[in-house]
Structures are given as C-alpha cells and as structure tokens.
Amino acid sequence: NAGVTQTPKFQVLKTGQSMTLQCAQDMNHNSMYWYRQDPGMGLRLIYYSASEGTTDKGEVPNGYNVSRLNKREFSLRLESAAPSQTSVYFCASRAEWKGLGYGYTFGSGTRLTVV
Amino acid sequence: AQTVTQSQPEMSVQEAETVTLSCTYDTSENNYYLFWYKQPPSRQMILVIRQEAYKQQNATENRFSVNFQKAAKSFSLKISDSQLGDTAMYFCAFMKRGYTGANSKLTFGKGITLSVRP
Image (cartoon, each protein chain N blue to C red):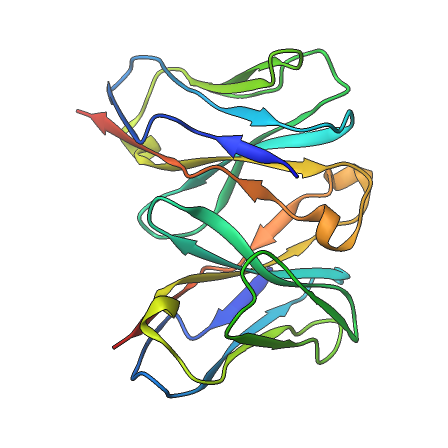
C-alpha cells in the first residue's frame, strides 16, 4: 500500500549544487505532477507528465527539469540550486477515471533548504 | 485561468465546537471538481472531501460537510464536533473535469491554519 513514494524527505544544499528528487507511484496512474509549497502561496505546479515519455511546464518551471523515466517514476532535478528554491516539494499522481473522482494521491513531501 | 481564494489565514476553535472555513473561486468552466485537503504537521496532504460541480447536493464525510454555492462560486467547509486532531492547514482546491495534462492540475488556495483548542 505504498501509493506515492518520494525521496529524500529532507535535504540541505549549498547554492549552485545540483540534486534530483525522486518520485515513484505503484497505482498505474498515467498523470504525475510536481508541486512546490511556500508559506502563504499554497501549492504551485512546477511540471507535469500526462504519460510516460511526455512532460510539460506548469506555473513555476524556471530552474527545474524533469524526467518521466517510465510509468512509475517522475523525477525533478535542480541543476544549480538557488535560495529561492527553498521549499517543500510534493509529487502527486492522479487517477483518471470517474470512479475515483479523478483523485490525486500525494507523496509525503521533501523539505529542501538551499543555503 | 482559475483562481482560488482563501481569505482567512488563521482560525481557532474550541474542541467539540463547529467551525466553518471559507473558500471562493473564479472560473468560466461549468464542469469541475472542488476539494478540501488537510495538511497536518506531518506534512502529508490528505483529501478531506470532494464536490462535483454538477451535483446540487452538498458532499458530506462524517464530521465534515461543505456548503457549495455554484452561482456564488463559494465552497465552504464545516467541521462539526472539532477534535484536537483536526489541527492542521486546510487547502481549498479546484480541478477542471474531464481534462488531462496541465488542464487536470489542481489549483490551490493559499491555505488556512486551523487550531483546535482543548
């Protein structure tokens, strides 16, 4: 009963370092998403993937890249971390049929601090 | 584009009492879903309740119910018999119905922090 698994849960980076946030789901969902959560801002979409091999930008894509490696995995990469990328990052996947109300399942989040 | 507004940043309620969290939204769509998510200190995003816009009946889930006013574009959450475990941040969210890709994204409000006092 894993749902959406994100790693790591916490990370501290120095400005300019790179890292990849990993996300995997075991629900056979086609759609996957990366959101960031900042105080007073709610959650904002960074990138999404409608299916294996396809990705597209959301509201706040600058400074990020993504890879949809297969149906299960959707990773988020910071090539050169900046303090403005300090945030909590959520991966999510979505059911695509009415019976589940097109519901989202979220991972447990990654708290990233860039110093 | 859709917008979701939660104008109250914080609320407090006494245990066992009832509290209502407000949410308004703006959209030109006619078919959509509205959600309330709970985020406790553990950071997990937990779906509380879902409303389909084409349904006139307000959704209920145990102690949680909504007041959905489609014409007014209002979607408030009522928590009855508040419990200490209800202490969390609550997000209102909107999603178009029947779309894929970016059009299937959730648009969130800024959230409201609810504290339940013992």
